[in-house]
Amino acid sequence: MSAPLAERLAVAAQYLLPKQALTAFMGRLAGAQGGAATRAVIRWFIGRYGVVMAEAAEPDPAAYATFNAFFTRALKAGARPLADADLVCPVDGAISRFGAIEGDRIIQAKGHRYSTRALLGGDGALAAHFQDGHFATLYLSPKDYHRIHMPAAGTLLRMIHVPGELFSVNPATARGVPGLFARNERVVCVFDGQGAGGPGTDAKGVRGPWVLVLVGATIVGSMATTWHGVVNSPRPGHLRDWSYGAAGAPRPLLAQGAEMGRFLLGSTVVMLFPRGPHVWNPAWADGGAVRMGEPMARRAERWS
Image (cartoon, rainbow, N blue to C red; front, side, top):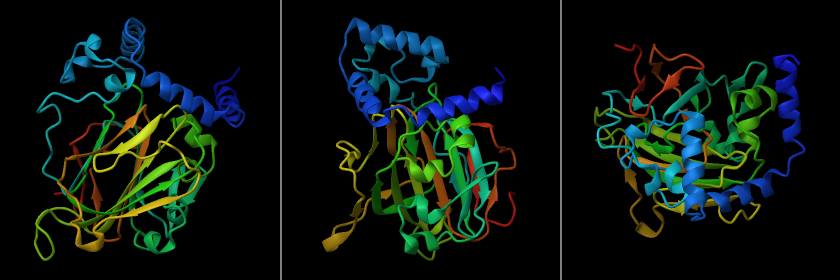
């Protein structure tokens, strides 16, 4: 069987799988304290995917009571130093796509595009901020570190949980399922970026709103943020929208590099930035490996 045919069959099979039930079942298993069985699964996973435990704050696989605890493990202090850049990479993973938003269209893969409005749960007013803006889509594979960090300082404005499908988000599925990232369940986090020093300063960062989207996938048991905890358990089946700063309460301000969330089993993040001067790291290329904290982009006309 040819590789393209095998890929198409694997994608087609996902339409038939009971993805919601499978994900719920795997989520329960990943959160269970199974003793020796859990430790055996963790050791198998490390060997199968080549997980580098030497970077973990707790390198002993036997120290993790659940698979989720292992999967969302912290790194040693200093393992991911922050580059001096307006935007740093928020995760360990691989570059799926990045570049300019063409009007309101984002490139998913060759021959596939989807709209910013669809990604953001149908919110046209929010999507308008990113007309002709910039995007990056990063894929977290099973071996990767699965905590998500802030690419720039930002004040949290909103969080939107958008229900949806639970297709895999691996590269083959991205090539085969139209509008994948706007179809899957996702958590949209909206930040106000005024640079780390606030309005009117020349501090590095992003001026105006920007978005970081956590995209769910098959067997991704849940997605969590540092300010809310687990967002998608239970899954009520309808859109939920939280606004921050109501009734005079302060909005959370997260520093560049701060942890903002995590995946319980892996997935993808999509970032949207407004139109304006923006240059990507010249070392970046589609399919390339990236690490949290490395330089991602400058909000300028030139890289240097």
